[in-house]
Image (cartoon, rainbow, N blue to C red):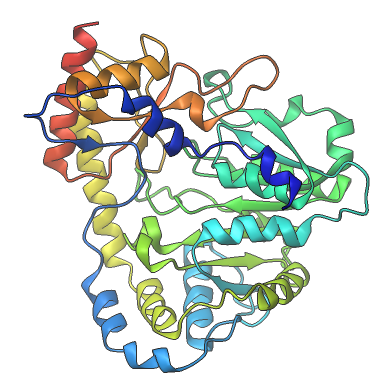
Length: 399
């Protein structure tokens, strides 16, 4: 077996299950899960109908590169959403459909890391999506974590990274809007990273799967390709973005997303994926095409989350230190007791499940930046989110 498998940490939800195992919550209460970021809003009917109407296409082998219609719909969406130059984005060269961003983020590191060079490093925000860490370890690289704390508005402090680390870096994972904090990087911050990528010769992988869940309709989060366009960097050199329909369109089970950016990198990534055997089924591609073409369901989705944030924050703000995020569907409140104990006692007393923040981070520079926070995913229906907030308030008041 690959010896690096021994270096992988248990997944956060495995640790959460063990934490809850010793608790016996009140039997009369309904179990409310705020721990997993699995959207529960209704998927768009148009997409479901398109999927059902094309099930006969399951008789066809899909190509790894995907159908032209899907790549074209993604191209049109990217140009409109991120104000890209139409002439700079080629659907054949700059876009690659993937089976959700989770598998693509992992696979990307395997394709990027050059193990012939000594001490390859992959930089990651901390807290982070655990796929970044696993991808780094199994690619033969060393993960280097950059803390995201309240002091830096939950944006990684890239100025704190030593030059020696930058020199050995081959890949930088960023997540904007961030998981779990919802913090959004500015265009200036992204441009600074692009300059560093040029200086030290590494690739930026920008996980933007929460980019369509934002507060202000007039101020959507900026993306990495958008920063490239503002710089006139129309080849998107060293820059690759990852997007998904899971959060944007409430289609986590469709396993549909895409990678876009540097054509030279994607050419090699396509070669890797061809051998990897991860082509998206044709009915899924056709349904995804319909999803990327429709924006009305996305606008309605954002409004539904705003209503939940309004309701939940009005209840919790008097008992917890918590703020509305710039984007995403998470709350990241500070806990009055240790985060693990908070989550365990909350479940035991109120049958509400939240995720300890320390499970989403690693100790770096002497601290675990997720410690004494919990992640709450406002994915349940509005009424359930309100009930959960009322129970959490009652629990905190009893501490």
